[in-house]
Image 1: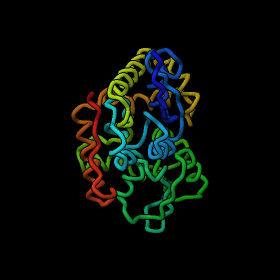
Image 2: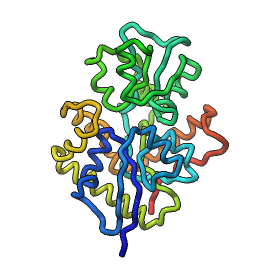
Image 3: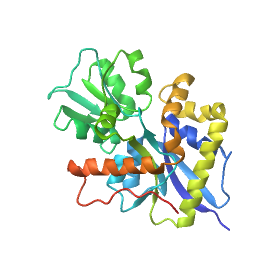
Image 4: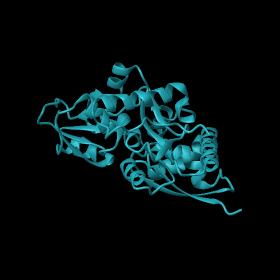
Length: 279
């Protein structure tokens, strides 16, 4: 039988390269699936999902809220939890004002959605690739930046201050874990293909957890910060029980995100809630 070809997109952040290392290197495979990978910035993946470029891909839950008629959420591979949220950073003494120049890491990222939910009308927002935000802040080219990925662990080394932890704001207002990003499959894939893909990703994640030092090879190759301790800290925070399986609490957090975005008028029309694959 000819394997089913699947176009797969994942982000370059350490939690994804950790979870997918065994698939990228062939340590884990399925003879019935032929996976080809693209590794990109999460906002590029969001746009690729919207354009139908991938069969399975990582994306922001914000983007997925607008694509629920085309995509189903996989129960594995999510970046979701407590203490994982984007952080608002600035140079010492900088405060939020209507005139602040605020950089966000992409229109469809969950980081931008959180800014819209909690700071609607504040500042002059510009979108930048996430890896350009910290350098723009340190150079004085922008006042504030909504930062994701490794910046949570390294901002003090760049001389920046924490202005607000947007994840903590979310947790305080909702009592829910924060759903940042997930893995999504196209609804027109055969159910058996989606089921096998889900199982394969779980196997890859289990392999990485059993061989964490080996997975550093893929993590180092794509990370913006190169210290192994930072990469390990990133994985410890963002690869958690929700990554293995969303579970009831994770699924409920998707409902809360949909309700908050809908109530704030940030969803077009009557977009249905996110659906988690259970096949």
